[in-house]
Length: 244
Ligand SMILES: NC(=O)c1ccc[n+]([C@@H]2O[C@H](COP(=O)([O-])OP(=O)(O)OC[C@H]3O[C@@H](n4cnc5c(N)ncnc54)[C@H](O)[C@@H]3O)[C@@H](O)[C@H]2O)c1
Image (cartoon, rainbow, N blue to C red):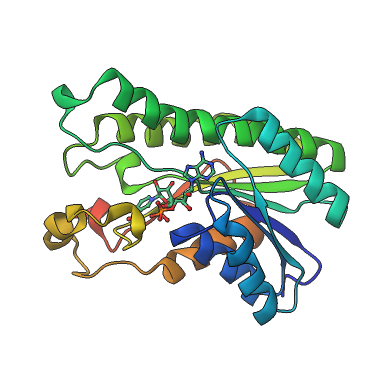
């Protein structure tokens, strides 16, 4: 279905980013898995063996403009274009508000909010040149709903929601869509620490989301939702609409 399309995903060495990359591959796209962890190269090789598209890995740090520009140049050199960019890399320090140190706050904002901003800015430049493109950012349940202990993470993810809206309006007439997907409780290496177990009872569907489930939402929003822009789509098992 997405044969001849080119997708890039940040933070793709593991977790949700890897699952998004695999879903693009399942749908026939060429995929560029990027991550600051060099393991991304082998992760991409594994997918390339299984699927028809040309799938490569690139080391790319979303906190460094040079690294992002370098990565985008390599993508254009290799494929001649970029159709979809998923800014998935993220994470953050989860602590009650008054316990967050300056460093905790800066780390979270720098990775999530600033990292997403830098990627979006450089991707939009590429999309303006080629005349089209679609961006999907990673929000979180914590973009709008707080189970507690999310002072810095919530600020960053809420900010990503705002930047998504702002960029969507700026470039709607340029054939560039910008949206955000907010995953629910998804078991990945990010949240090994028992945090999810505590809040699982508040999820109306009473189970975790799988990375493969939310990956389908990302790919749909990136590729098929062609009149949707500026939106944050929650895939959260019902958390945002009620407690049960
Ligand atoms: N897992 C959940 O329950 C959940 C829920 C809501 C939102 N999210 C969001 O989904 C995204 C992915 O989460 P995950 O659970 O797969 O996390 P994860 O920690 O399993 O994976 C994150 C990936 O990002 C990479 N990364 C970190 N810093 C980077 C940088 N500076 N440059 C490039 N890559 C970098 C890591 O190496 C890792 O491969 C994050 O933005 C997270 O906030 C996750």
